[in-house]
Image (cartoon, rainbow, N blue to C red; front, top):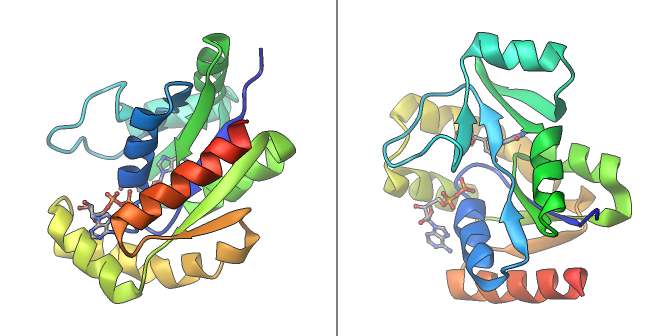
Length: 187
Ligand code: ADP
Ligand code: 5GP
């Protein structure tokens, strides 16, 4: 069976990973699409759980073989992409796929899957909030934070191309709205 696709996109630090993890606990029919990427593994991350961590060369080989539904060089030498086999693996289990991808990846998936996909943009209250959240996450150095914030302004402009915008100011409210939206779509 072919299931549906629930896509969460936002600038880095907006809270999409937090919301997606919450939804995975609430909806047993959803399974997370593990992306491939070529960045360094962070403390606490696991191969096959957070990402399929590949070298830049391995990643490029898969691009050449056409194994990606979408891929992108999000930051220099940091490639990220969705493997076709990953979506099929989840659908085969009779589940729907949930994605945590950047805005270009999200819009790309939406374009390919149309009505089967719901593309949600997570809106931070402001760029200042984004920066504060990235700092508090303690996963990025100053340069990486600056790079991510530098991209955020452009990314915010894509919000109205999504099916739905969820404001992530108070986390509890964002959780509730995300739950309602996903429940309606999966019905
Ligand atoms: P993204 O996946 O979009 O990069 P994360 O989910 O990792 O964002 O969130 C970035 C940081 O902000 C994390 O430390 C997370 O705990 C925190 N955060 C998420 N949502 C909120 C919120 N509504 N208010 C305050 N902090 C938040
Ligand atoms: P991070 O390094 O913080 O895990 O992710 C950096 C950015 O890459 C985030 O915006 C994240 O959503 C995005 N990303 C993760 N996986 C994919 C993917 O498969 N495709 C695309 N296009 N972006 C991705």
